[in-house]
Image 1 (spheres, rainbow, N blue to C red):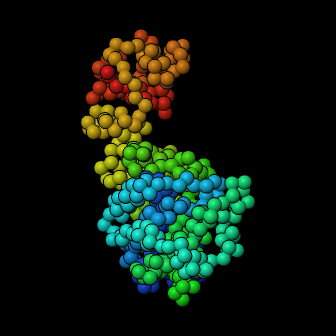
Image 2: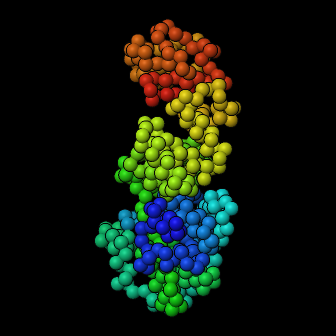
Image 3: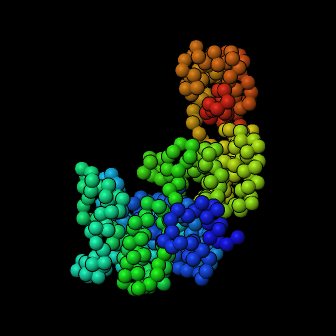
Length: 414
């Protein structure tokens, strides 16, 4: 199967600037770039589809340039609803460093060249930019761009600072064409207008052919929510912002409607392997094997195999058949850091503990749960209202208190 066919089958392609994708990726090996502005100090799950696409392209022999926008990040791509907060150069530089480090880990053995557009944008003079670049754009073209048109129609208006952003991104493409021989830019579907501005600038200034590829907006079909920080549900690649366990849980909890799509987009499992997983999962969706395969593969890709296995094991403890005795000291620490945890003492009555942990709203409700055989500690069913905590329930000073099938907390001996 040709690369173009693989990419289309996996669902990576939304728009291209030529009739056939094969024209861009199946012939001679090209230099391809993707840019990300350091508006935050971490990339997030919404960035990952493009990053995985770049790994596919790199593995096929194309040269990849990863641009971190130290220059454009000081301006900001126009948002459709409000003006971006301008960040200081110091903050932008810190964000550039962090995102570059994340990308280096993500791409691993793939040969990727990193560039920072502040290197050339920071040297531009206003007169030079307006004469050499600005004259190739018309206001008529710019105000048709979706984000710009939306802002112009709103009460917020649009500053000239953000209005000029497409020119800066177009200049990036021109610079990389002239200095690196770059002929393709890849980005998210929301970047189509900006990418095309670069394609057109290369054509007008250099009488050369350049290409654009965009990845579709990733939306969970089950919830209708898109990936990314703008929705308030950001899942960060930085483990300090989203722990590997929380990251694993995000992928484990994706909807049935989207899980197969995500296996194709976010993992390097072969299409044949994904087909096998899909068949097994369809036969028994309650086991959520497709989600487990997705969570393990993506967490391994971002955080490494060790963290992925630990996250899988902790998840198995809280939602499966793994026992506390099976956890290592490190894994127990991960459990305490990520699960609802309450300090308790030997001798406390189970009724009081249920209320303390908020698994019951009152002692009366706690007694009702016990009488209905809905309570267990570390696998032992509790049927006596006078039950007190004792050491037999604990391993590594931890126990799992369960109400029903899904309500679980960790008890920690203080």
